[in-house]
Length: 43
Image 1 (cartoon, rainbow, N blue to C red):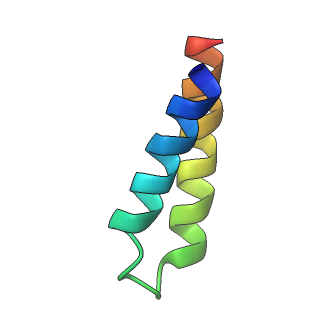
Image 2 (tube, rainbow, N blue to C red):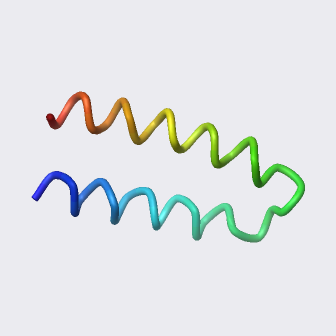
Image 3 (cartoon, rainbow, N blue to C red):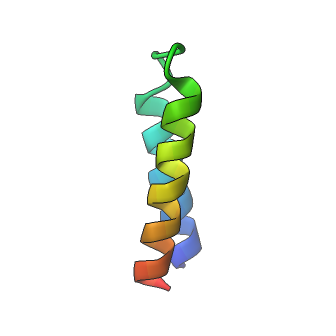
């Protein structure tokens, strides 16, 4: 259940940042780290 919530959050985050192509890789890294932190908290 936590995994589905994490997937939802990360998908939403990527959609919100989808318009900005110049910082795409930076945002991907940032949300990956955020995802790990979120998973650590919920897990």
